[in-house]
Image (cartoon, rainbow, N blue to C red; front, side):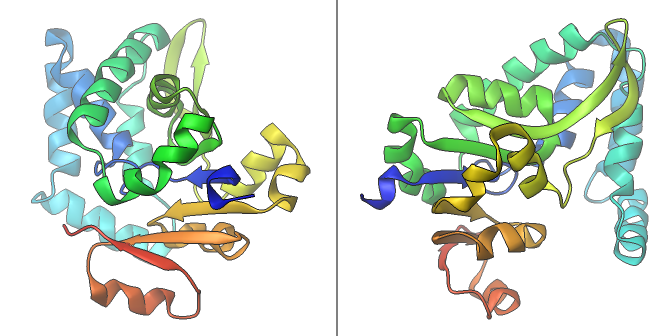
Length: 225
């Protein structure tokens, strides 16, 4: 059995595509609708790389270990129809697959994709991960959003940050993680998932990033900023 026959568990943000797809989806959704322009500008103040608020969130997250920015950003979805966000996700997924692929990763998963032995495992929002999985003909696990009567509450129902293995077992059964698999990720929070893999690819921006993974035997895919 060749490596192409292994189940490939693939991270999304920074691995499959270059974007932070949680923020990317929100930017796309708010920018594309005139009635939501105000929320777009608020998100820009919160999340733009040059924003002082983005820096403040980074410091707070480093100290607390909690992903404050994405929870505050998701709060801007309060009152939106789930179907409207799903439509935005389908549009954004097409953009990502056309323009934002991480080429080095796609070289490794091209054959597994043809055999449908790929699972997208992401803490990003389910609408965008689901849309990407649908385009690729694969399955997924992702963070889900709370909704009531077809409208979003602005809160997570289930955040997969640091809990992908549990989500994979809950959806596919313990047998999935017991069999040999290949893992592909750039996230340090996926460390245990990578350690458990028969084969692992770690995506890094530069050679200097390899140091944090020094104790893991992996193949590194250097993709640049």
